[in-house]
Length: 99
Image (cartoon, rainbow, N blue to C red; front, side, top):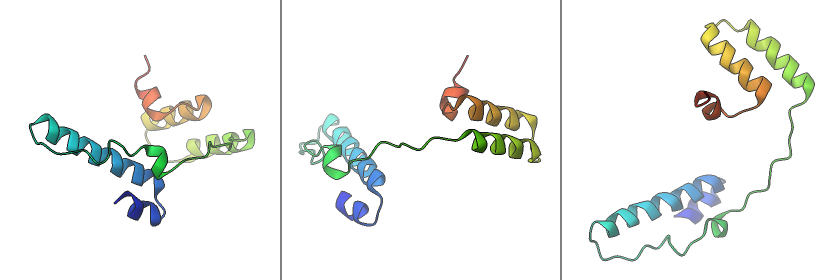
């Protein structure tokens, strides 16, 4: 199943498929089913490996994006977090959970 998903050009999704299959079998085993989990012996790296990203946002791109954010017709409660993400480059979840 993972190979089919990977063959269509979605290696990250193939790894997610493996994780879901692994969880389904773990749930079944936890609830008394006597089955082997086929995903246990299959490592994520055997499905796909990913190269680290080396792309950086340039100062020009930050400046242009900042100007575009200001020109979009939206609520300030949406515009302000977008600017904060752009200036700090944090993930959305990190910003939401920040104190």
